[in-house]
Figure 1 (cartoon, rainbow, N blue to C red):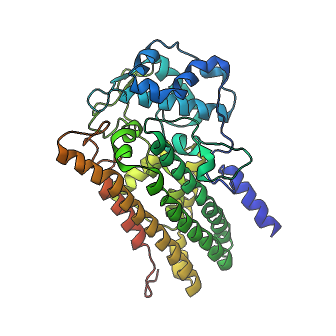
Figure 2 (figure 1 turned 180 degrees about the horizontal axis):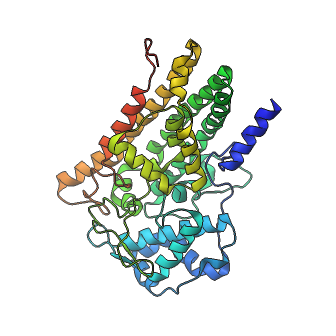
Figure 3 (figure 1 turned 180 degrees about the vertical axis):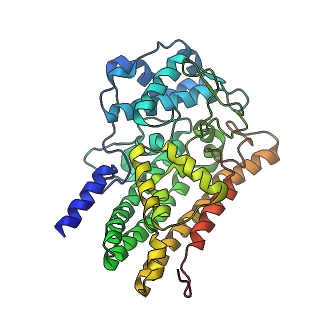
Length: 404
């Protein structure tokens, strides 16, 4: 038992997993050293500066600061969040019809250097806006939606806050599942059937909690605001019809760079569950999900790759005669299918329906309008991708007569 606890703690440390918070960054910083005051002043006033059309001018006048004074991981994560949100505001300040084609050196060069140190791309990622963008209103209070605020925000008011905070709470509910993932990994090494089942049960419970928490989105995010105001500011410059030629990072490259916007496909937790359950995402869906790993913190990406390289859990269970183990596996897969089905229904409500309404009205909403009706912010063919990911999970269910 002591050996098992030690192995679990070592795995949690190696992959930067918190027992309570999962992949969330613990105790994110809310400010940087004074040298970076210009970055934080812009980032803290982003919505006003975008709406008053002042942000681009202020960024163009900004000095080129060196990131050498950023001395630890949390400072780098806050700098990446701030520079990422400023970049999104700069590119999309004038909406879908006049995106910036060039990110000025004052922003592009330090952003590139910070990104290199973190192993992240120079664009606002899910790891920035969700995992590292939270603070407690009452430091002594609980991690619940009324007590969590964003460090930095984008246009969209309470709907912006609701979108990122609900996503954060869903990730926090994944923490139990990640503990289950580690438990199954260790149990597989010694063919401990009881340990595997116990770990799978934790993943199942976690997935069910994630789905219930996801439902908070309906209370805290207005579909019209999400589609018409916020969504463009989490859109990238790869596979995006609004920026088909990518974005030039001045002082970094002489050629445009193509990067995907923030996407739930960048959630390390969901991809960990896929990998653990030996769910094979194939074709364009599999290629897209694999590419999204480049947008994850390297240690989180490493866990997915470690799980992918392990012997197939599904094949192991098929080779066993344990009906309890098969049931535990199927319950886990079913919970993942249910979560993905619920995500599909949310996408319909928050993207497809408002997008169709904008098209029918003949006048696009502020923001993306109809430009991204069929595209995810990460650049995927939205509904086809989500259905394919769900169906791949469905196909992993072990039927009564299945065998290796």
